[in-house]
Length: 395
Image (cartoon, rainbow, N blue to C red):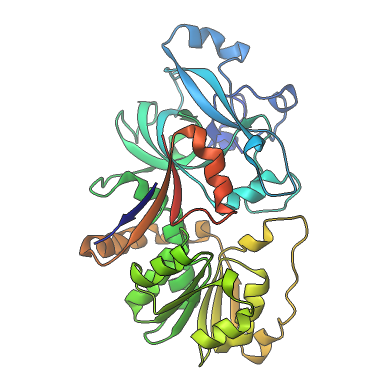
């Protein structure tokens, strides 16, 4: 369903410091993970140490999406399986735990790297036999944390399941303003939004009249970068992978131009056509041949914010770039980043973007899959270009 809006987690017993920001899942970890100090998920209702507690409290079914094992290819549906366990609606006293009912789950490209066991990344891999973990929006069902009460809405890292326990609620953000859709806190007011905001404004420092190119421009981050740049007064061009998406970029998001990279035999020529005087700012989401073509078309003192390289997530080997000397010749700044480096900007970012949304001149597109059963195919669709806008699972 497309909606366009316009105008390391561990088993109980680890140290408090080790558990502080980790998500508790209700799945039963394999024996090899139960004793591991680096296990990525916490306690299970089937664990003998908590079985009595579970029997003394109300239990409800809890659907989960379980990650089966590491892969060196694109994921398929069978890499993640649906499992149902019972969850006890009770928390042990003397903790800071919070029990959540998950409402929305976020599907994001970075999850691909978490499916590779030997991949060096900024976030740990998923653990086989345990639920997938990602950003979510949830409602508080029970709370032992002084910052949260029953009924509060929160956003943070949760397991892909209907109910999750966060071992320390300090890792969650309370949603205090509910006059906009809650799902926005996984997109335009969440991680993708802060990614777009920090990458464009902090790294690229756009000025009115500058020429901006955004790859994967109809995605969760790209659509926001494009509109931030337009608000700044820039000339903006985006690329996407279908006629539908290109039309959306031109007619709904108001870009100055857009093209379907799949229909372009020569990306270098396509960029020269759109930017006869060259590119000042490139927001990088793709990598590979697109990055090479962009480097050939950058102006002196251009800036490149490297947010993602989705074209390099498909196999084991990554493509090399053959014209990096352009960085020297044209004195180009090229910087990789992740949004967590810019968490200090969150209050400023939310205030400013809420203003854009309230003014009614900012378009935001969401793509919903309904039911946790649809979560595997929803995240896989990211790598097949099926989503239009921010991909979410609505529980």
